[in-house]
Length: 371
Image 1 (cartoon, helix red, strand yellow):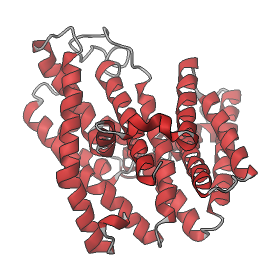
Image 2: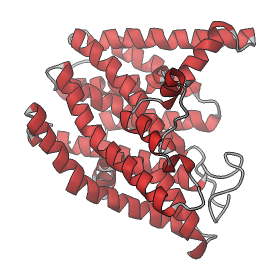
Image 3: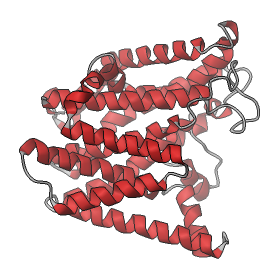
């Protein structure tokens, strides 16, 4: 299978991830006990997607795979960050202002108060956890839309991986894995120590507050690590070289850690499926061919903007319009998923890609065919 086809399968993975997150937000997120009163006209009738939020972890594995690919094809640390910001920032700014404008105009009932407040643009367009601003400047910020939270772990991962990579490109994988495994082990030790002490005071309590108030990469680091390892294994297979025992051991240990970190059996099974899906992608990609075809690849290609706009906008449309369109059916969320997917595909083709290519050419001299 060609490299282009393989990347199309990754877009298919993104489509699966974003659709699972949308199903979670449109059927399971906004019902009791998560909120006092269901925001869906169909109530809890279709609450089958309460684990759909794990699509975000799937995104993190994909990100680890893609970022290692990107790092290997980038000459300097500054160019890497320019390319990342060109990729992320324009759509975030557009999505944030679009959400703010939409809710300021149409949400008369105050369904999502955070989406009305201009000051919440600060953590949204900066990608920085609002807890950091709140702690440093005694503010009361949150995200314009709750799903923006996952961009901050991504930014932290970019920082950690890019610094380690450009300090020593040849030893990047070994250095990154050693540092990551040490951090993950320390995290487990500190949290277990806190549980054994049975107190929120002292170092464990301070540590958990530090993590929850911003620097939360370590919580999701195993998923990014798996993505990096999967990329290396995939590259070795394409080149016909043998994967080193170090990589195989790291992959096995981290995969086991991820699966066992699931708090219930269903979560552990979903983590196992994510891992197995990547292994099939590496060793038997032909079986995943349908994921690389339209419309799945198109949805995946536009998944970033779709992720940014889908939650509050989609739930508001279901809340406001669903009561008038078969309120007890899943027709309205299906219409919302299809409509926002179409909008995101059009936006990606007509706005995002041209803007990205123009900025890359102007700012860092990267042509379209150079990524």
